[in-house]
Length: 193
Ligand SMILES: CC(C)(COP(=O)(O)OP(=O)(O)OC[C@H]1O[C@@H](n2cnc3c(N)ncnc32)[C@H](O)[C@@H]1OP(=O)(O)O)[C@@H](O)C(=O)NCCC(=O)NCCS
Image (cartoon, rainbow, N blue to C red; front, side):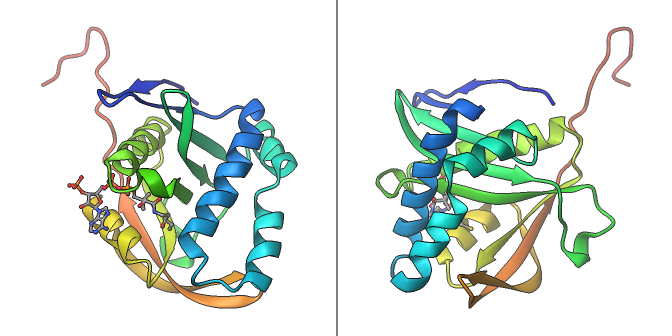
């Protein structure tokens, strides 16, 4: 897989995460999920979900075994967001497609609405195109209006309903997807026309 770094004018640095980043990713994962859903998911369901989903060891293994790719966004030296993609499952509706799942994209609450999410998403989209995926898909809680606006703005289209479980509690989600136009690659000695 290609790897590259991106520095924006605002000083946001986005890069592929390494196994050594696992504890930062676990902490960011717990904090951002809690900040986003503390009013939605009851505590008795939230705590086991956080404990099971954001373990340092699990994240280390996912990165080492290439089961997932994590992206880390740092503002100067402060980690403020992360994203995660994986390609080991696909919804029925996309079965013919070489699609990759954007399983997580989260920015810390203090930094939301400042253009960070868009930059993080753009990095993930470029990475996915460069790795020859034909589409990105994701599932989002149907009442998460901020995320729904965000994904709509980025060009995602609704595909089907989906039930997501947090410690056994069902939440109605939507599956969205976006087709990725392949990056045009020009080679030496090859004419554009
Ligand atoms: C969803 C999330 C990653 C978006 O990141 P962000 O940094 O807040 O978004 P940005 O500031 O980059 O906004 C990008 C675009 O989304 C749209 N958008 C963002 N927040 C919006 C809001 N509250 N209402 C309407 N549109 C919004 C804007 O139109 C913006 O477009 P613009 O650049 O043309 O102005 C971030 O809000 C977040 O982490 N939310 C909590 C976690 C979450 O819900 N994650 C998704 C789970 S499926």
